[in-house]
Length: 112
Image: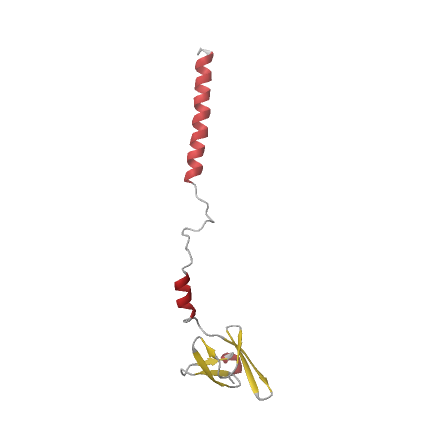
């Protein structure tokens, strides 16, 4: 039979070993919902990309003779500039920009 001090020492060693191994395992486990990489916003890159953003024609509204358009959720009139390009024409279902691009309003719905 082992002396009491040896049993206590063995018991403390087993408890301490179990606790330390639990700490080691918990440090190696990774939260599966945590993003793998954290990106910091680069203000210069965001500013450069703003001008290249896609233009989306949200709506066209006529108020008598004057037309209003909503592009990227902002209101514009004929002659205004959107991302540095002038709005040259506003038609019933499209907007024509100064650089020749046409923004279509719900093209699959308005075509017959």
